Length: 274
Figure 1: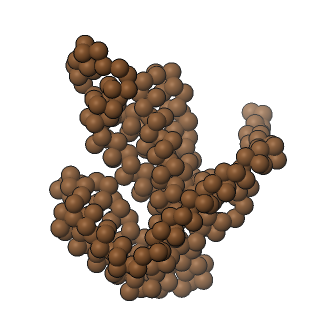
Figure 2: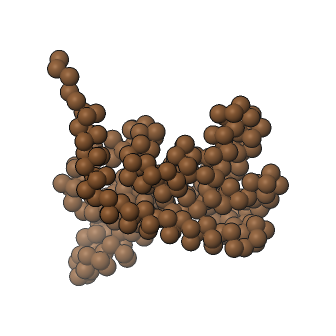
Figure 3: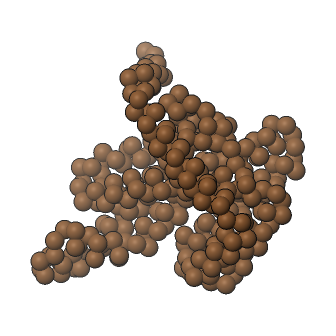
């Protein structure tokens, strides 16, 4: 078989975008960097115990007393390891990537459910995005945005977006046809159908997509420490590269605590009862 130069073609596309669209990528870089700094400043402005109480109250409302107690103890535990500043950096990256991924993913999922042609086009693209090794996203991100938290967020957005699109699409499609026909018979407009019937009924499935998006963002942010993302991931990377087992274990343990808290907060009481 003749050699197909897929790699060379991809390199050419990346080089063309990097040179010709430099101004666009600089604008995206400044925009994402502003969001990261704003969220990190907001999380760092209050003492850790204030955020611990606020998160515990949200957890109590969303998932019950057990998860509220775990959230409070977990944040105090992270602070006791002197890792709260690193945890704030990691959370700012996760929140930024998740917000942007959902702002893109949920509308695209709604359109995918409405238009079958778009769904057929998106399906192989989403398969590629989900099965591509996470490390592959880091290289073009660095070429476009240089080393730092911005390429980490950009690669995280790409990696974490597919579940939001897929599960939004699934949730809209699972709305009973009878309810759609009833809404149409009463003369509902398309936006009334969407916001009053389809989205409320699809919300449990969409929330599952949000949960998966957050979990993938957390895992990718740790991997993205290789390109200067900072936070807890850099502690794990430094500990592994320098064979400091204790440092790597502490960083990994803090990541696990954050992952459990975020998972339970997004699943709510239904996830707590499983």
